[in-house]
Amino acid sequence: MTREPTEPTGPIPWTGPTPDDAPATAGSGLVVRGLRKTYGDHVAVDDVSFRLAPGSSLGIVGESGSGKTTTVRMLVGLERAEAGTVTLDGRDRSARPRGRAERLARAREIQMVFQDPYLSLDPRITVGGCVDEVLRLHSPLGPAARAARVTELLDQVGLGPREAAALPRALSGGQRQRVAIARALAAEPRVLVLDEAVAALDVSIQAQILELLATIRREAGVGYLFVTHDLGVVRHVTEEVVVLRHGRIVEAGPTGQVLDAPRHPYTRLLLDSVPRRGWDPARIAEARSAVG
Image (cartoon, rainbow, N blue to C red):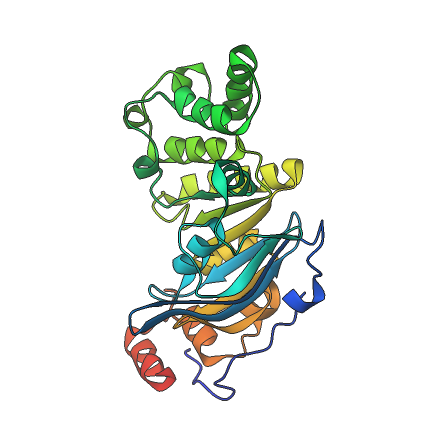
């Protein structure tokens, strides 16, 4: 049964580690403070702050247009923030990078896996070549060592010699997503951003990819930022979560606490919108109107 929205209607305070708790020093993880981005009169992201501890996993959830993707595009450098700071282990990523070496260093630190891996893979290059391309940019390895590392990375994501020699169009959606993950890991990032990375996959393939990601995080110690509208994915793979609405964080904290006892009407609306037995779309529409 849909719960009627009640006060509070403003942002719910973060109950986990805060950006202010994290000094900008080595080992402090990813610290985001006060990010803002506008497009003309539209405010896409407004005063967004959070912390991703080293090796931890944080979910960023919200509906389309909530500011999720714009936020992470600023983190990886695909968009420039108009205000706010981003630091990773004490290194400021907010200013424009100076020169090719600094751009490559920043790219190594935070890698991104997109929803549609086919669009981010060169269709003219074999799978092995796609991974090798990243190694040529980001590692000092010679040809033989790179070839061995390509094999190792593809094996890590469950792909073998046949897939390595294939073009991306010859693979399934799940296999292509594995390639995208292997290519991101080739840079040895501190943080991996997954932007709706399993949204386009069948449920059974989603489960395989999520289990793969959990294994990689345990073994490599890389931190994850999951950008998604799927609250089931968030519950399964994250320890902390932030809820974005109209570019602002309305609720944040430990994942179980936020999903099991949501305090903000918008968070409750997201949870009540998940189809299940007795689900009533008309009541969801009424609740949406009440939230505004």
